Each structure stands twice: as C-alpha cells, then as structure tokens.
Image: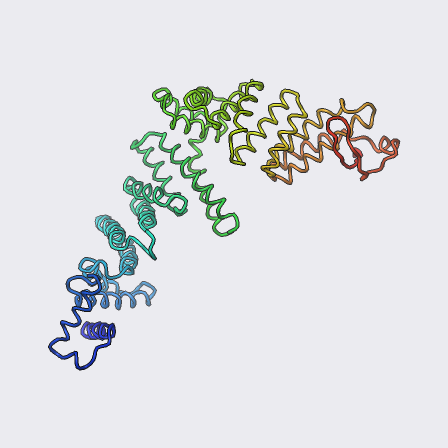
Length: 468
C-alpha cells in the first residue's frame, strides 16, 4: 500500500513542471524533485517525501472510514500517519485539521474518563495549530471564527474547563464584533454566567456582557431583516440570551448588582452610562439608583443623551415641566431618528399630563413621522380625543363624535404595532359604547359611513358610527 502511494506522490510532483527527458536522469531526479518541493515555501516540511507519504496514507484510510459511515476500524490505521503529518508538516493541508477534529471526536466518545482529557487537549491543539498555520482564508483573517468554534466545542465537551472556553469565546466575539457567530455569542454568555456562579467574577460581568451581546444581536437582526433564515437564527439567539439573563433581569437584582459599584465610582462616566442604559432598558427608571446615576452623569457630561435621561428621570418623579425642558434641549441636538422619535414621543406624554393636548399631539405626530411603528403615540392621541369629547360638543351628537376620532387612532395603533392589539381593543370596546345612538344619528340627518369632520381642537375627518 505505502509503495503504491509513494509512487503516486512522485508522479504527482513530476507533473508540477514539464521537464525535458534530456534534463532528467536517474542521478538528478531526487534533486529536481526536492527543489520543486522547497520552492513551495516549506509547505511540506524538511522531509517532503515523508510528509506527502503520511498525508496520502492517512487520507486513504480516512476515506475508507468515511465510506463505511464512520464505522470501520480504518480510523485506527489513519491516526498514526495523521499524527506524523500534523507534527512534521503542519502547513501542508488545512483539511488535515478538519479531519483530525472528526477523528478525535469519534475516539473521545469511546474513551474512558481517564483518556478523555487527553483527547480534549488534542482537540484544543488542533484548533490552535490551525490558527497558527492557517490564520487567513481567501485573504481574510479567520482567527476570530476559529477561536469561537474552539470555545463552543470546549464548553460542550469539557464544561469543567469553562474558564478556558470563556477566554476563547470572549476573544472571538471581541475580534468578530457584528460578524460573530450566533453560537459564539450564546456560549460566551453561558460561560459568563457559569464564571460568575463559580465565584470567578462579580455579577456586574453578567450585566455588562448581556448589554454588549444584545447590541450585537440587535444589529444583526436589523441587518438581516430581509433574510428569513438568518433573521430566525438571530431572533433565536436573542431569545436564548434573554432567557439566560432572566434571573438577573429584575430591577431589584440589577440595582443590587450596581449599587455598590456606583457608591465606589461616582465619577466614572462609563460606569454611569452602563447603569443608566441597562436600568432604562429594563424599565427600572423609578429606582433611586437610576435617579442618582442619571443626575451625576448629567453633571459630569451634559450631553443630549444625559439630558434625555434627566427628562426620563423627572417624568418618573412626575415633575413634568422640568422634564419637558430637558427633553426639548435633547431633541434639538440628537441626530439619530430612532432616539429623536423616542424623545418626541415622551414629550407628547408630558404635555398630555400637563393638559396641553394640542402641543402633545404635535409632538406625537412628529414622533410618528420619524417612527411610524410608534403605536403608543396613536394611543396617546386617541386618549386625548376621548378625554376631549364632552368639551368639544354642545349637544347629544357633537359631544360624542370625538369618540369616533379616538377609535380611529386606536385602530391605527394596532396596525402600527400588533403588540398593542389587546390594549387598543380594550379602549375601542370602552369608547364604542359612547358613540351616538342610531336615532341620534338619524335625527341629525346622518347615516353610518358618512364622512364627518370633528370640530374643536381635534379638527379631523372621521366616519359616522352608531353605538351597537
């Protein structure tokens, strides 16, 4: 078998260059072949013939094993020459590393507990050598991707080595950023949780890592919204990370985690940004920690974002007039449409609380112009219309027509954001009862379906409907 393979190897390299029979004889054949192999930048090592022989032998037996459905004993014959090749000529073939992983995984399944650790070490070595000798693919670095695969596999096959896995996964995600794989992100967070549970890190690491990963996940969800398969993968990753984070997601736990950090580092702007961001995201804005960290952040760095946070804080304190001042300051400076829409929506709610309905609607409409899916702004306008019904009419018909306009807005809210369907339907059911009766509609020479302009500050055209 080996003689046949060696002959094949020699024949292969005879074809690398066309040699004239006058230039090749029995004396210079070996020198010519060695020169050809050396020209390949040491790809096949110092003993190039030995390397090619080992590659061919292991591949022959590997293919037999593969053809048997990975069941035959040919794997045992493949292992020796594979080991010789990977150590003597590690640059010779990238497939050698992929084949090696498959063989080691197979052997590890059948290994004793004492042997398992050696196979795990070999798997790590295969990944590390692949990074060393094949750091790029098609001109681009693949180090981050390989580190991620290593971290995921190590966490799965040797969960007790979670700290090593964490290191590989952290480095992979930091290198890859938005190109990090779904599995690397999910297992990075699992390794983070385990590290904290084992007392190897503070709980703040969980929250910081969650914030980091959710930013990457949400970016990928946005970038893949037109790719159903990838979108489903990233939505699944989001659900996985959210579920893992759930025990730490309550306001009570988050405040407990960050309280001590805040007390010790009140001048740390980056820490203050982390605290305010996560507490706002998890709707913990009524906590004293949010109030204190927001105020301190604005004192140290009076930016549009810190002004926005001050407005949010003052809304929680029901200090609506001062909240409006901070938010109006922020909205003039913030350029991102999504953030600007959020502030405008909040300003609408503030002026609603201050009973300045016309101004509140103006801000709500501006928010919707930037973010048409802001269903809550439609709900807000509907609520103001419903609250104005009695004041905007002077008889049994006109004092009820504002409810038509209000229900229109609730229907728009459902279309804008289907998560608001239940809330909108409850309001529709409530206010539909206050529509004018059939006889009142008839008395005023109207019929259902007619266009009708609601006067007063509302000044909108709607459709005539009767109470059912």
